Image 1 (cartoon, rainbow, N blue to C red):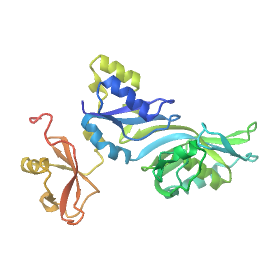
Image 2: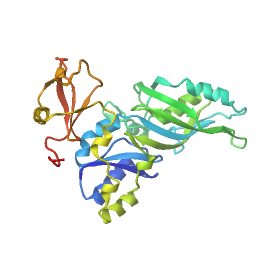
Image 3: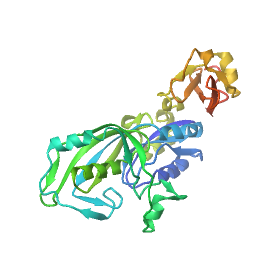
Image 4: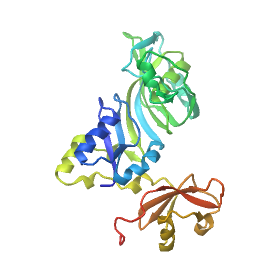
Length: 312
C-alpha cells in the first residue's frame, strides 16, 4: 500500500496518536504524517503510507491554509485557549474594523516570529515544550515565516461581560508558521494581550477538506476492502513541483541514479529547487542541481527504481 491519505484529524489527538492508530487500521508499520497538528486543532493531516513516506519532508514544507479565531483581552502560556492566563488587559473600547484590517494587512509578506515555548522546536538538543513543562524559559531563535494572505472573515464580536473582542480569520502561510504566535503578535500590535481561541487546518500538502477522511471512515473502508477510494497517489503530493516526463533512455539513467546534464531536457536554468521526474505517469525521482557543477542534475530523492506496473 503506497500513497497519501488526507486524514481529517479530530480534536483531542496528537498527530502521533493518529499515526499509531493508522498503523493498526492499515496493518502496516510504514506510516508517517506530513505536518504536525496540535491536539486542540482539527483539520487536514496528510498521512504518508509505504513509498509515500519518501515525500514526507516535502509535504511538511508545503503551504497551508487555516481558519480560526483571535481573541483580544488576555494571553496564555500556550498562546491558545488551552493554556493558563498569563496577562490580562480589558478591552474597554472595542477596536474598529478598519483598525483590525489595517493591522492584519501589515503581517502579509515575510515576517519574523519567535516560536512559542510550547512547540517542538529544538534548543540545545531539547524541544521547547520540554523546557516549558519543567517551568523553564530559554532564549528562542527568531525565524522567518511567509504570510500569503491574512484576512478577517467575520465581524468582530465584543463581550461586555468579559471585556474581550474576537473575530474569525483565514490565513494562507508557508512552512514553519506558528498561527498561535501570529495571533499573539497581532494582538500586541493592536495594544492588547491576545491568544488564538480556535483553529482548523483547511489545507495542507496540496490536500483540502473535501478530500479528507476520518479514522472511522478509513477503518470502514479497510473492512470493505475499499481503501483505494480514499488513498491518493504519491504523484498528487508532488503536483506543484516542476515536472519532466522521461523517455525510455532517460529512465534507464534515472533509475540507476546517474547525474544528468540540464541541456538534455532543454533547460538553461532550474525551474525550481527540485524537478519531479515522471516515467509512464509515475513519480520516480526528484532531482536538484549539483552543489558544485551547476550544469548537472543529481538525484535528491529516489522514489521508485522500478515501476509498479511496467506496462502502465
